[in-house]
Image (cartoon, rainbow, N blue to C red; front, side, top):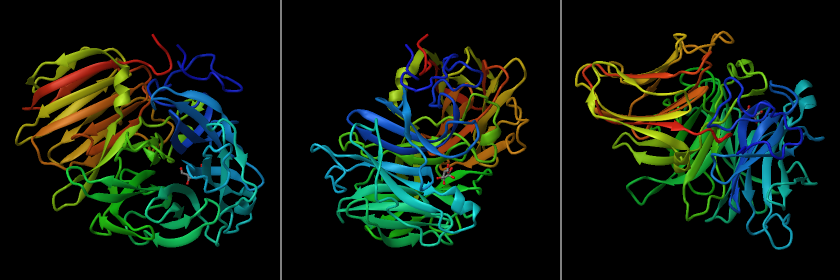
Length: 506
Ligand code: FRU
């Protein structure tokens, strides 16, 4: 069965998502350019995914909102473009909500409207060197996101003279009975509220002099999460920055604290000079969470753009450019006196892609373990007992061309790493090849590594998702060999699955 492309107006799907490097378990657009996920909202059984899209080229350009829906966040149906540039400008990133009480008055027939809140980017104003070319607008749909109307009173939030003024993420704040908007404004986030999604009042700012500032702040999010194992809730703020990520280029940092409906107060990282990251790999940017997940589900569901502005526009794909990460559940865990860690785990819905399960018997790993595998997509779970002194554990994905992705944990430096130095084509950018690292948050001698390997990416969730690294790769032929090695270490438990393509049944 073909899951994609049924209602795209000009379906360019002759090769059915089988091109070289085409992700098989990740969302990618049928053709042309994609960046940030936008407007993620759940309504009447459907997860909506809008995305920054330029339908005329495989590089960034006048931004539209592409659109797809899913009943499981795994299999996607492409829908026609939702939002087109208009007299106010290109349609930059933003969010969508269900206006349950029809506070905006934009609903029809007693049903709540779906309202998108986004940034207009006026290219003329930008070219002319003004400071006011980014404003916020809204659009609404009364047919489950299938057709959209621009609000006639746009923009709903004018620009006070701030060059970077974008990417509104809106949610309903129950205690104050107001919509709260978090907006990225250059080197900080600004908070606003509104009774009706049309009239916005500035509340407070957060971020100057706090966290990483190697680049401009973008694509914020702000939500409450229960601290696992307690009945306490904390607020988590996501702040994507570009450049200035821990391994170069684009990445998403986070802060944990309190939000009282007016002001966000940071508690973690405790030292304002520190920064902590949702994902330490180079290819998870501009990620935010779904709105309106029903309380009986209760998950905080996240999706990021699997790209990095350093090289996203020159990666070696011709028909389309880029993909999203797998959807993930975020959870907040205490770290003793050290604070908190935000964990990510792939949604349980992805388990239905599993096939050909292989259990790997417990065994020593001093002699490298060669797994019987076919090509990606696949999922690998390993629980490894590290040797006390020399703790090095590595998983090597390779092909007969000698190309390889090496993923592992280095006990000498206490870092996880993904090494894509020899992963295949890296000729398109000097920022691509390299060995990238992320921290470990436990000193346990047992390590869990959970890997999702697609045709052109690896997502690593270590220690139950406490340490995450997402990296793309472009091998000339698929990796078809997997080796696990840990000098003096032991495999306690392991599982390998072949995964079914989300685009084909075969
Ligand atoms: C982040 C970003 C956003 C902006 C959009 C434009 O990747 O730069 O800040 O809204 O992309 O496409």
